[in-house]
Amino acid sequence: MANIGEVFGAASAIVKGMGVTMKEMMSPTVTENYPDEPPKLQERYRGVHVLQRDENGLEKCVACFLCAAACPANCIYIEAAENTETVRISGGERYAKVYNIDYNRCIFCGYCVEACPTDAITHGHGFEVASYNTSTLIKRKEDMLAPVPPGVRPPVIQETAEASGH
Image 1: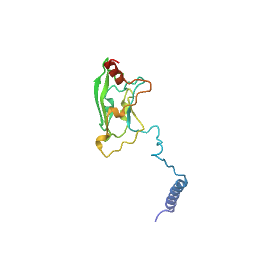
Image 2: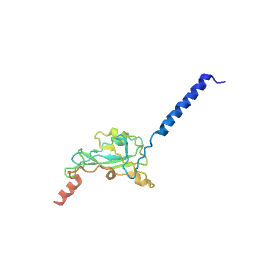
Image 3: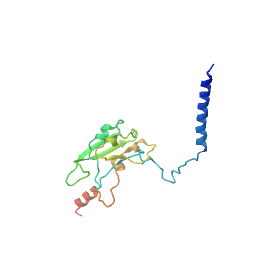
Image 4: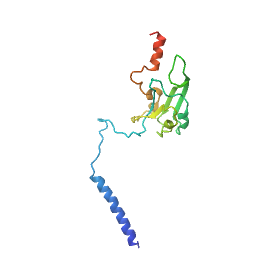
């Protein structure tokens, strides 16, 4: 036969749990009207990656491969290319000619963001990446690149304008 103290302890635990349930039942419901209003995400939310630019519009990524090395899911693929005097894509000697992230494999752990010495890759607040076609979940550099800051000419446009003589 059970001890009287154990019975009262179990009963008090049930009453305490039901009290929490009743309190939550009486509180107002919070509903977000997502398609009609923008979602309210926390600042620390880890969404789709963004490749950042510096204040001059150059890409911050210098193709050091540290993000790919830190990735436990092995979902980052980079090909490096050299900057030249006429073609300057990033502030360093090299830039990422190809930068792909396979979101079929990405676990949004943030190790790539922590490993980047130039703060070139960050987590944005984008979250709508679901797809029935897995080939659309491989995001290329062009998909992730941040827009050029206002008032700055992008480096690629400067290069083509100089090459055409304008």
